[in-house]
Length: 492
Image (cartoon, rainbow, N blue to C red; front, side, top):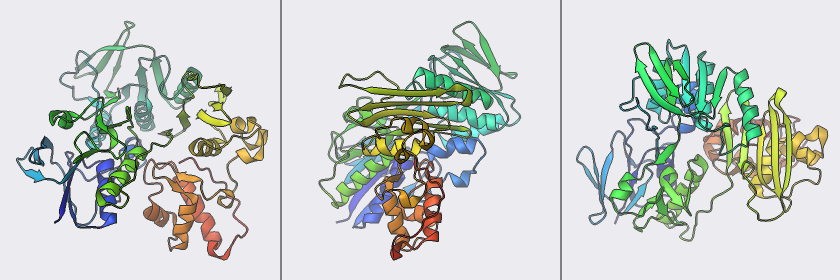
């Protein structure tokens, strides 16, 4: 009997699960129901689209949902009937399932400020492709923009609008930017870097109200001041979309509660991506969502019934032109008291450079690297793999010129270990790329198509291209040859 699998949500998590199921074959019918009217797209690239660096076709996911999958866009699911094992949609249809997967994602938070209910025309949250379109439409002919929220997404939006020539100010209620990832000194350096790129910041001040009329937008602040602009972008965080799960009686905390196999309190229902809460933790990032999709595909197809989801260390990258930032682990917060901690810092605010490392038992437990840090690739690899740090710590802060050579990025892909992770989003190693080259892939694009490297945040695109260029110069199957001297930074 054909197994019926229904996936609610056609975002990055739902689309990946459909593709993973298709790749494993078997007798099953997969139905994907997406509320948005578009094909699945790469949400991570919306800030690049906002900056005008790419067009809409470039954000569409190149990976199809899988032949035979019934993909329905613009189809919102309104209810789950667990007893009948079916879901109901806004157009009145019913879809039966043997297994249901919730990939409903999260929604942008709109702060409860006077003047935001209903949202004025030129006040737009930044979360979806339609949001991006509205922001771009409002930006045409605009001179000034405000961004409420100085987290990762808010800063990417601000930089994108500044790149289009707008005068941009970021308003953030905390005393420094990206407080979840950065400490105060790093936040100050980042604010200085943004200032040099045309983005002003107002920190440690709350918004108290919004007024909109034909002349523009006014944002009132808690210190009695007010700012005016032609456009206000809201980037005040997100909340997991758990309404369907809660209405169906599933266990819900901040997100839909799942176990190590991504199963909810109903074993016929799984949840993945932004809406899922595993071991008390929400993800909100693409790499964990895609790893969860793999786990569910392995479980549902029986390919690996014993598979378990195990979160990997997360590296946060700020994707904005003129800013190079990587943050990972516990560097921004206070030590947890688990043992002696070694702290190393280096700051050069005039050059927009800051580095902070936290080391325990000769392993990196956290790092912040902002600006021109030659050792960023090595630091990411050491953190990701849990490898011992060099005895000369300066090499991690300052790079090859000031410390031990092993801490600098590999001068050539030939010097990178095969186990080195090139693509964090898809967990693709250098060895996997070499193997695909030997199997017939002959360009960076073909390596990406075969391994999915560089299809997530895009931070490893240059590294994949560098490896492809090196492989084009040598014949890996013929043994080790003199490599190219092209420098490759692996920090995807």
